[in-house]
Image (tube, rainbow, N blue to C red; front, side, top):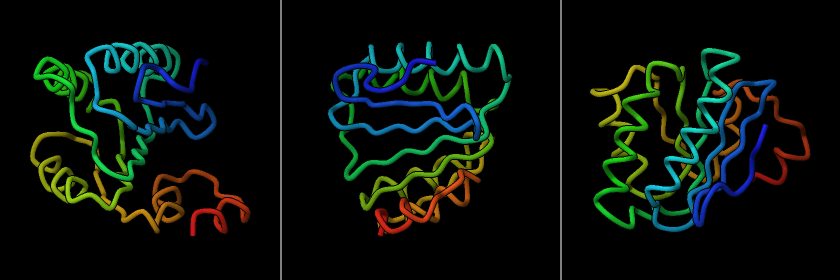
Length: 139
């Protein structure tokens, strides 16, 4: 399954064992980022039909490079929210808390925000196996 950097500022991977997609947005998000992400997720869903979780790790929220990218983001959420059980947003940005609050009204997945120092807890909440070395690194 392809993973790694999908486009300019979005790194994505799928852990096939846990059924969790990890996203690391590092630059303003573009239309192409969501097209590539949709392709990655949809190829997994053809085989498994559901994602256990989505782990978003962002030091800060980079925003979108255009209104079209924002719309494509909303379309991605609309097309996939019924196929994802949980979303963990790991960030110190105020957008994390806002996203958690807003998501409760618009998507079926359970969404939780975690401050950056609680990456291990976010992974545990998503049922991603965490080895001791990762726990030490995440702190």
